[in-house]
Length: 68
Ligand SMILES: [Zn+2]
Image 1: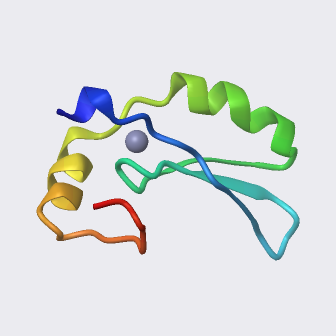
Image 2: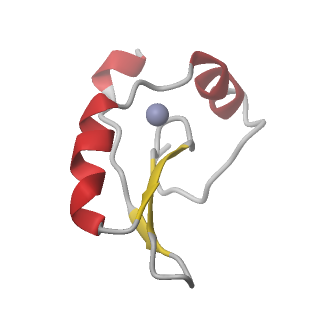
């Protein structure tokens, strides 16, 4: 039940000073912005890509996580 899992969005600082937000559910890069403060609105608007969720759930995409 994916609806029971809340995505979270760790931020990554890039070498050029921009910030990425990564969705832990579908592993998509939600947004890349110059100001980290802009990420929140991108995150609230993010909808997981169903195809990415499928690939993640089948182990075709992976990110090191403690969950499961
Ligand atoms: Zn997502």
